[in-house]
Length: 55
Image 1 (cartoon, rainbow, N blue to C red):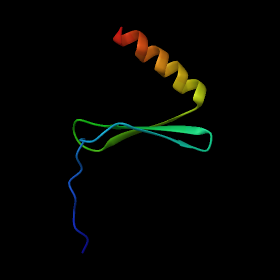
Image 2: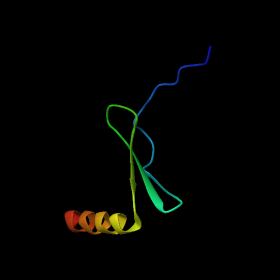
Image 3: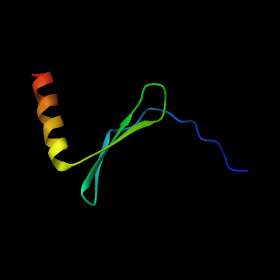
């Protein structure tokens, strides 16, 4: 039987490129990760929106 590892939301946010898609993996508070796939254009729009929000 395989050992069960707890699913935690700790760890860094990861961003990787797979083909034409950009994958963003964000740790969630209740455990696990939110994985979002987007195009480069969508990632640029998200970066701009985030930059505006934190100013």
